Image (cartoon, rainbow, N blue to C red; front, top):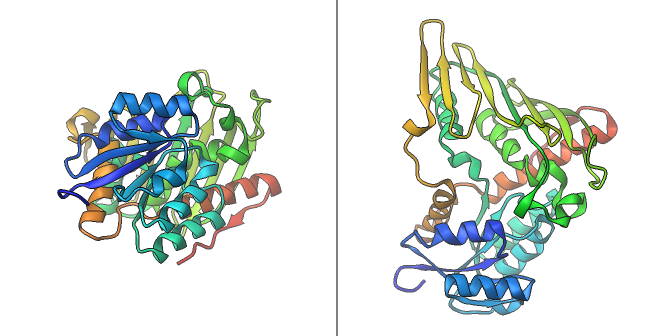
Length: 335
């Protein structure tokens, strides 16, 4: 560190990379000093926009002595190798979701960071959105009693505009929708409901023959604490929607719209409505980066660990296996 700042190199200068860089520059303890992208024109344009040095060679970026940490915002199939390389170079790592595309790669990433005593945080940013975090707070408080059932639906159309990339059409490079999109919801279900004991899932590709994975899926899960969970994910819905509910022993939490919506807390005695705008929160991307840099400065465990990232990936892998076999799949998470 220099002058109390963690100096950062960004790997991947696309949409997510720019989002991370923009929020990073608002955090006093962080300084963006370099960037890397496989495409020379993208790398140069990013460097000009942010006023920093750039390269197309990851080893060149990792070889710089003035970089303490890296943010990895590349396509999912690159995360494991880039994280391991960064760890070997002694750099702390913030890796965008999904952490990797296999449990084995997640293990390699965790082990590489542990071997070099560097931090590893995974960008499961949903945890920091207002209604998402309020649901977790209320469930965890126990004020409504034990959680019984948690359901989430995330429905919409396909990748368009800046998100329409060829690598997103292949399960080998993106992990399919369950990894590229719904790893957010899988992490959230586990974060609120606890570790998952088993899953059963069905999925089909109805409208997107250019992709090699389901564009609609229904997932049922049983948590180790006995509660049940459901995820309905779809890229075939003209009328998009994103919300859910949590039913507990003494009341229910209804959140029909996560984004700029409201949270209804319903018990036998009363109903309370909490609007998203009433929940003060900093920008979620800024929050995750702030927590990452604080884990480095304070030498503590990151808020969202490699083990958290691994658990979400393991859940997605199990869901795909259930789809392929037609059977429920038991999960055994590494302790």
